[in-house]
Amino acid sequence: MNNDQKRMFLAVVLSGLVLFGWQTYFAPQQPAVVEADATKQIAEKAIEKNAANTAKLGTEVVKKNDVVSTSVEAFTLSNNGHSVTVNSDLSIQDFVNPGAAFDFFATTGVEKPFAVQIGSGASFASKNFTFNQVSPSHIQGSNSELGIDVDFEMNDMGKVSYKIGSKTAYRYRVVLTSSEREEENRQIRQFSYYTQKLQHMKAGDSDEDDGKMRWIAIDFNFHLFAMTFKDPIAARLNAFESGEFRSTFVNEMQAMEGSIVFSKKNYDLLAKLGDKLDLSIDFGFFGIISVPILRGLQFVHDYVPNYGLAIIILTLIIRTIMFPLQFKSFKSMKKMQKIQPELTKLKEKFKDDPQRMQKETMEAFKKAGANPLGGCLPLIAQMPIFFAFYQVLYNAEEFVGSPFFGWIHDLSIKDPYYVLPVLMALAMALQTRLNPSPTADPTQKKVMMIMPLVFGFIMKDLPAGLNLYIFTSTIYGVGQQLLVYKLTD
Image (cartoon, rainbow, N blue to C red; front, top):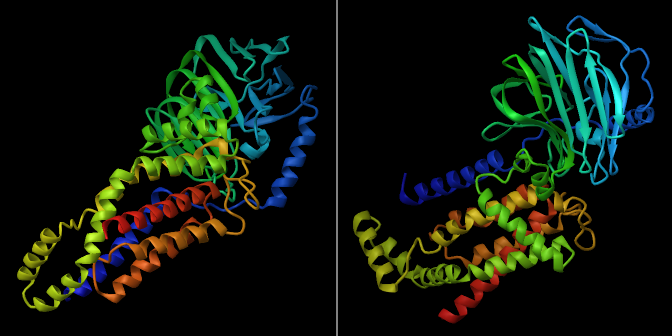
């Protein structure tokens, strides 16, 4: 294999690695999508049932693990526009948050997504309690047979504090139930849980794990339904294809307390709710940079109430701040362009003497003051900012329903006409043409020119806000590059 073939092979392999890495670590996997019509019918059915939340449900036979409970009743807690329907068997069937963009059923996907079961030997089952409505926002209950007392109280932020206590120690299991779903913006319904780090299991997958739980949740489309624990609890986690997610606590307990919330995944709101729920917003490895970027977007939005414009303005500010680093990169690229003909001659002259060719090439770099890595290092330095910006635009709730202009009605979902991905790909192709080619091989040059098109295809279904950021950053970078080239001629 000659040197040209080796370089060609290396270029293809590197391109493949870039695409594979992107798809593996940044593009969410695509589970099967639930049919929209079926989902709508289920949602309408759930709304009809929830209209009678405050009434007695009558005699309902609940059979789990061959244990039967009867006379399940529903009680509603309400405060400041928030409400939750708690059943006497410690299940929850509805949760209303006036600040949510989507309703509870749209987030969870099932009519009863939450239940607390009590262990008896090797089995667990729901048990019925007798409840007393202390106030509109407070209920208390007990099961005299087991000697267990429960207490639920909602504050004005919609946070439901719970306490479970008994003289006898019991093992408990919390069951979250959901259904498989993916939106156009690639938001996947999943079970999230926090131990020492944030982890996920997709709804409808079969999986297992264990650890000390700080909270568990159903996480979907920028909304979170979560149960937190005051003290970390050792638990065994099992997800099933049926959509169940079981948190079975390892040890018997006499007391358990924490909170239950349903909220938009707004960073500041979740931080106020506490219990490290703000960590459900997965900013990834570069989270330390993502939070300042989010703060910057919020700051700009305070003065320019359009998140699309805020993305453009903040992108221009960041690119301008980094221009001194870019200046060195562009200057090095220009020098590389100037000596390209000389490098081609050296390659032809010493094609049978690789060591001599390498020596002469390095001498040519030194003489021209060009650094072959000069264009790469600044790019590498910018990668953390790129990935941090990506995570913010992909995960921040602020962009849900936020319009830009014209056909862009929601920055959190894809551009419906793919205008931004096309513009982004064209801008990247222009930038590629401005960069010096590392080789004279025409095949390798074609591979480099194809990469913007491949990247545009990858980005076409990702949020419009993310495409807007990359397009703005690229086109502004092209302008900076042309300016440096003109100054260094």
